[in-house]
Image (cartoon, helix red, strand yellow):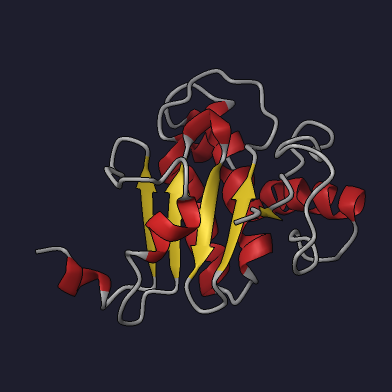
Length: 173
């Protein structure tokens, strides 16, 4: 019943609780690719404190990200905040690697406050500063590594100072 809906959306974001897909943890590329169809471009598996995985249907590329560092006060709504940041960035034409940074920065801001307070007081300039801190640390290159290259550290190891967004890295298939 949900397949026709997927054909009419650009991005599908699911959490661990929402994704009941065989092989999603062991074979994410294969499992997430099975959802592709219609105009669906990105299949995104949000994995809470573990970060998550994005499958780009068009390029057949799988990216993993680690969560941004944050002083956790209340994790409620982190996944929704991630989705909001990522989707807003994509809507503005930001490449997926950088859109992941925007999503992670928004989620980090959300969990640093109680309830909605982390987001309610968030100004765009503060969010841009979080993303800029990451760019400053990692350079202006996209967050993904070169085709076929494997990162030399586990996801999350490239995170920098508090508020720095994670680097997205391809997953070996």
